[in-house]
Image (cartoon, rainbow, N blue to C red; front, side, top):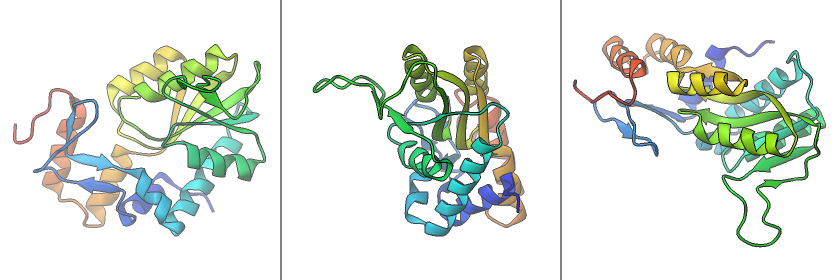
Length: 212
C-alpha cells in the first residue's frame, strides 16, 4: 500500500514530532520565529512511526527515476535514516559532517565514497536548506553526483526551494507544511484560525512576527 504525504503528516503529529503554537512561536537556529516546529529526532523513539517513515524513504529512493549506488546522511539528523535506508536497499552508506574534523584524518565525509558514485542525500527536516546544501557541496567536491535530497518534512520555505533549484538538486520531502496543516485541521490538532496564522508565516518566515 502506498504511503501518502498525509500518512507521514499524521505519523509526525501522533509522535509529537510537530508542535503547533501560533501564539507562542519557536525560534529556529537561523533566528527565524515560527508558529510551527518539527523535531523529527522524536521519531527515533517511536517504533511504529519510525518504521513507517524509514519504509517510505526507502521506497521513494528505490522508485526514483535516477538510480543511486550510495546513501548519504547529513550529520547528525540524517545519519540514522540514511543507515536504515541503506540497509533496506542494500547500498553503501556515508554521512557528511558540517565541517572537516580537527583531528585524526580530518574527514568531513565518513563511510568512504568514490568519485563517480550517485548518492541519495538524506535529511530529516528542511527549513532554510543551508546545512543540506553544504553537505551536497561537500559530496560534489569529492566527485559524488547528487541529483536529489530526500527529507521527511519540508517547511516549503521559498529560500530553501530557491537554494536547491540554484544547486540543481531536486528536493523530495515525504510530507510538507501544506499537507501537515491539512491533516492537523481535519483531525483537530489545529484550528482554522491557527492555520491562517501558520500560512501567513509561510509567506514571509523571516519577516513574520507573532500577533502582527
